Amino acid sequence: MYFTSLKFHNSLCPTSLRHCREGIRTWILFPYVIRVFVVGDIYERTLNGELKIAFSVWNIGEVLGVLDRYFKRKWLEKKDYEMAHLQFIGETLRLIRLKLVKIIPLRTKLLIPTWNPAEKYQIYQADALQITSAKYIDASSFLTGDKRLYEVATEEGLNSIYLG
Image (cartoon, rainbow, N blue to C red; front, side, top):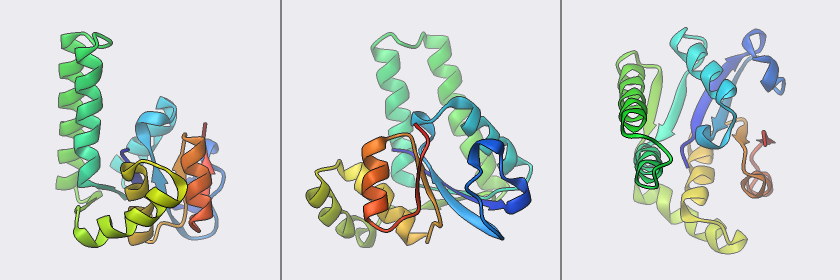
């Protein structure tokens, strides 16, 4: 799963994310499981300098893999696949150049702590990595459209918000 860490100034919280508290907040978001308008709003606010996002290098490959799978299953036409692929890579590179995104590297110190939640809750390793990554960057909130992941993140001590 692709996740994003976001920092909101309280006055800049979008209507759909009324869970903001005082000061700057850090959020985790799983874009391809959440409604498009939320993701669009988040990226627009990031490009406006209102937010700063972070995601794992692992997640870049996952997003590209999902696009490829959709294309191979003929859920996306070639032109739509190519446009989505180029747009995702382009936006990611643009955010990196503008220093509006932090790419969390995939390291052993992040992978080892995923073993326990993956076994304890019977979740995918990728989902456990999202939880571990959220803890690693000290996210103050964890947003997801996956009900099970929301429950596990809450159990693991994250301020999880279910958007599904």
